[in-house]
Length: 469
Ligand code: NAI
Image (cartoon, rainbow, N blue to C red):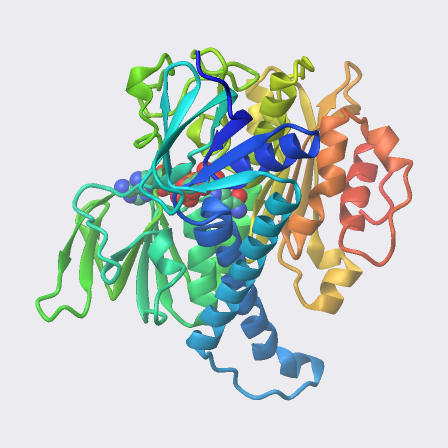
């Protein structure tokens, strides 16, 4: 048997892979990291970071548009798309550079090329600047991530039909857009493009946008979209499209014989795991019928000594879940007997305007799980800081388990929609995952004036003694 060159080889340099590499190397493991494109993966290059940067541009545009409400006369804003794109790219480049520096500081060996797994924890690397070679490790972590999905008849050409990859580097903002899929990606892009001046139609097959979010939160987003001129159509599957003869756009067909003519179609119908180049056929690693690598609660595949983490496995496709799985795999490799992750308590943050953030059960989810529930909802409309900022659309909804006497006990779910709620979820996340009761949380002092005090207010009202409502 050949000697191992690394304690751990990680295939894939996105959040799952680089978290495993940094964490493992930080503990003293000798780690090799194989990446075929750019370090940082989808999140840094064509996902979270560029999408949130463009949403921030939209936020600045909105703020300037309403500046006169504050007595600040800035005139009509206009958009210089090239500057926007340059700023986005500068942020990506800085973060990728920082990541590369961190990996270097921790002596992670980064291989440029495509990594393929063979039996006996051997990884061949080919097609990149590191040349072709074969390495062996005591443990291998597969972190090859995911890629965009499209639907039949919608060939991605980067002009008429785009996925998130193309939207994030498009050279101009289309005047009219159909967004297929009202999930997190669809709503973030619809929000961003709508605020910057595109005429947007969201087409969602299911009965609500943002499936998985509490319907009360999804409704707030839908209402805000409507106020801002973004059309949302739910319960309509898209069947195809017919490009215009002059090449200036296409007609998207959906629902029961309806159609909409647009310059560009954005397909955001989910992402699929990207195990295509991992060479799993020659190993005992098993994928399910959707292509996800099958793992146990500690991210172990069926091939001894091989773990899989991140978007490659059927857990929430979120960078922070990927970080957690990368670290979990390292702890398992070290024999630390780590507890499996509790995905139920995962924090979710969606950055459309208004933002959505939640952790734990939705109201219906808790009922389906057999809980008797008590809920409380408070509106940002009554919150001082939200009024000051001028962003009053939104609610805080807390779901608690009903005690036998009908009073509220343990906090089961916290759902926020409104201004800056992605930055406010922290205490709701802790309450759910710490299994705090409403009495325990209500006894704590909330800073005033803040938007986050609305969470405290909502929990306090669940004790039967609200202060303001
Ligand atoms: P998604 O699965 O969340 O949403 C896709 C939507 O498309 C679904 O609601 C589905 O019903 C709809 N759909 C599918 N086929 C359709 C058709 N033919 N016509 C109309 N609607 C159709 O996937 P999405 O938004 O593309 O995101 C991919 C992954 O990335 C998700 O797991 C998401 O959670 C994650 N993500 C998370 C973000 C965040 O948390 N801020 C941001 C971006 C992505």
